[in-house]
Image: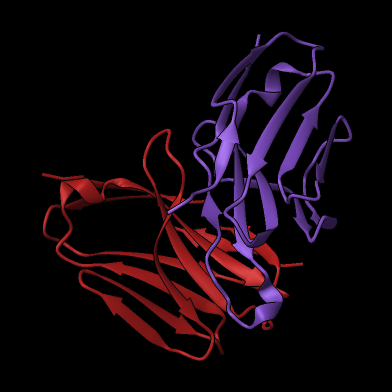
Length: 116
Length: 111
């Protein structure tokens, strides 16, 4: 079965550079979540989208932005990178919550971002 | 918003013993409560979930109980094995589309 695809898997950037992370949800999943997970920490919610609109915002820095496109894939854009942005970034998708089924969020394998 | 608290942060048990991890949440409107297992460097993966109209659910060695009145739910792992060693996260679905995680419990099963 198709899973959530994230690219790239690994990314190394220098301070003050920009990075773009991509997430391709499971087909027919229209809700996407982005999480940041530092070493030994729990996934911190950044932002979510439902039907191409931002649905919730968490602890996402102003230097970051994200969007969901017409094909439901999402991109997380990170500018002016700092050393503290080094983390594992997960994307997760869920089917339409309005269809009456509360289902799990399926996670991608993550993008490991290292800022040097 | 929702506030999810998870305890303990670390748990060490002997192989064959049981492990219990507890989460509390703040919003009574929350209606879906999954548990995820995350091995080092890998994605969180669902191990069991429970919905608000059910008090308990069991799947082999794993069970989850939900007390909606007290707003807490717990993960129970019986006959623990070394491969159960991982970080476990509870999560709460709030307002149908908002997904929040607990802070995680690092479980170590000693052979």
